Structures are given as C-alpha cells and as structure tokens.
Length: 84
Image (tube, rainbow, N blue to C red; front, side):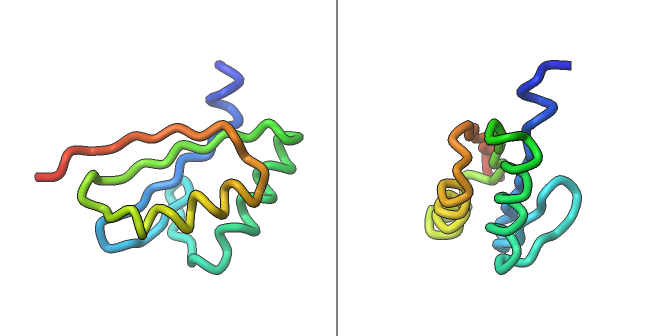
C-alpha cells in the first residue's frame, strides 16, 4: 500500500456544512483535537484529503484549513465534486 494512502485522513464537507472524518460525522468542536491526534499517530507525517462539493462556500472550508494548519499537517489535497 502506498504510504501516503495509509497516512491520509479523508474529510468530507457536505453542502449543509456537516463534517465527516472517514465515515463518522464529527462536531466542529472536536476537529482540531482529532487532527492533532492523527498527526501524532503518523509521527508528524499525516496527510489530509478534503472532499466537498464546489457549491460549498469557502467560509465553510476555511475553519477546517486553519485547524489542519494548527495541527501541523502540511500534506493536503482537495477533491471537489461538480454541483448538480
């Protein structure tokens, strides 16, 4: 298995603003804590993939980007779905 895939956490942001880490919905108040834990588990080499719809406003994504940065995670990729 590719090492990047093994250390990558996928975070989904729905058009309603709900955030899921993997398949689990996560309250906004816990995200930073979970990202710090993810970074620690991967010895400072964690990766995050953010998946969202292109209709999701940047204001819903920006707090997540800030939490990722504060957790010290620098390997970030985006997957954006086309809106219908």
